[in-house]
Amino acid sequence: MSKKLKTEHTGAKNGGGYWGTRHEAKTVVKRLRRRRNKDIIKNEIALIELTLKKT
Image (cartoon, rainbow, N blue to C red; front, top):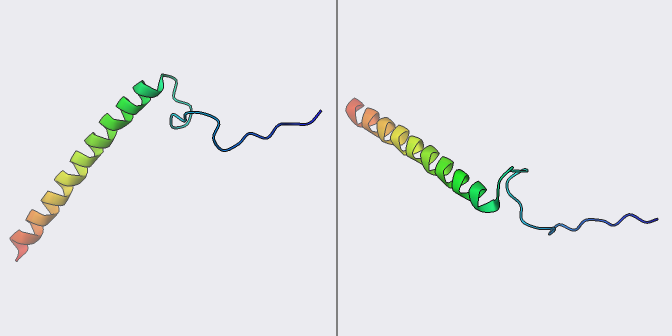
């Protein structure tokens, strides 16, 4: 018996075995990404304000 090799494109990928559907996975990831981006922007603004106060 010969083993079949799986190709690179074997179906939808949901980020490492997410338990739900693809739609659920995408909505969760979008929310997390937006939350992280908000935190990054807040930190950048605080850093800019801090440097402006020093000058």
